[in-house]
Length: 323
Image (tube, rainbow, N blue to C red; front, side):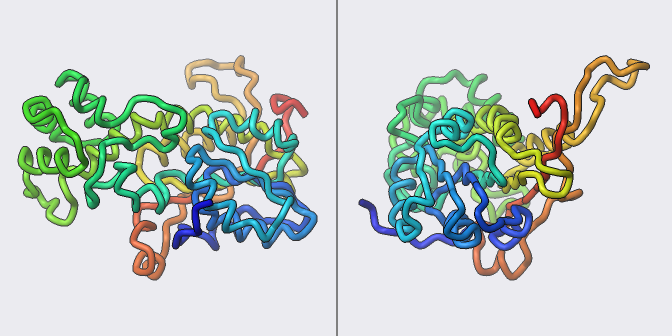
């Protein structure tokens, strides 16, 4: 097995506070990574609690198993995409749970391994797959085969990069690419570091866009959040299961915010409809009116936390929830 790797979980205390982990509870860490959040959840839930650790990255999950082995059979592991969280929970015997955590984005292991191709800080193959064992299109296949218009749309849509057309033209001109450094160099030569972005490498948003597309991250989140809500124990208004989501870029956070707003609202009919016909019933109550950001101290200790936003909600009963 892989030995444990140094990892600093983001917004750890804030996540634990909003999960309100209780003795004997049942929890799911939908993005286990190297197990930083999971270990604290396992400690807090006590010897009678149960935790399901999910991750699509088999290598990361193996490292988490090493880190968490002292908790024994209280912890189960499932390798897969959290868009399948319902199936994985059922197979592990988790029908209703007291809390689910999503810590989105890439793990320290993925960023720190050159052969995974997530970071242009290290030279490696343009892969970027979080679960390479499942196959799928790599970043290299995208930049080397997509046409210029499709690349520009991808970089603008997922990377929110306003210079996407210039970058896409350079990619088509300079390809084929083999490594992360090849691509980063092409982007930098195309747009430079001008325009007030001297501290941020111009390839940052390009790599983000590719990573999101390669892993279907927004689709997984869009499918996984409702399934997670289904798994939460409705309990009472104060004691229902908790949903905590930590996002790292605006597209993720926007999707999470919209989901929580919709599921914490009763009628969702258009304003022009005078009488409710949707039958929608609120299933969540918001615990965070605004996203929680890391403190300056945390960012100083862990720069990866800089862009993190935490949002949380608690499950409440409702006829639409199957209760």
